[in-house]
Length: 284
Image (tube, rainbow, N blue to C red):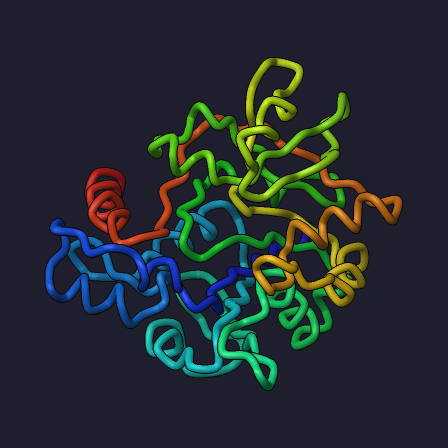
């Protein structure tokens, strides 16, 4: 596999900024939570962004080239990772930026499928190569990132055992449920499943599995489905799971689920910041 990883960091971080105050945060942490991208919230003794720790894991997993998708107001990313648009050298990685432009008439980005589409438009080489893509506010393990890097299938994703995630069940119940066939090929994925839907998603081992938004794609196979991804009527965004379902249902491509059972620390709301602070202190 080509050693490329695309990190999606162009979102508005609305859930973080709109979440309730947490008594476990310092004034500085609260200020940053209300003003910064989640990817740039700082942790550790050196006060480095959570994105630093994801980049560290990516480098250790074997990746070489990184494209960070940032928003139009993403200048702060360049203060951390280099001012050039392309090929900044950072701790063994080559870091470039793609800008997720907001269409006229909107005040927020168009979603994850649009973010990935704009990255491929700005870096056409990605249309003919393979790459990993992931969120910027999840701290994926070296092992998970490496599994996608060495995977021989054209398209794949990490299919997490829901029981291994160390979140409150109320939060876990909002994660996207997946279902794969006997060859571990994705059959369907449902975002924020209703209680009535959940029982239909047990796998052959009686497990519920979820997507935490870390994928491997071959550009030539996913590109047209990103380009033509319809807008979700509820969220008013172009969502990556929609593009994926269209790809596996309307083409010969498939998405292989790689089974994993481990926790994935994340930053969704302000209450996650103290939890992440403790995780970083323990593991890094």
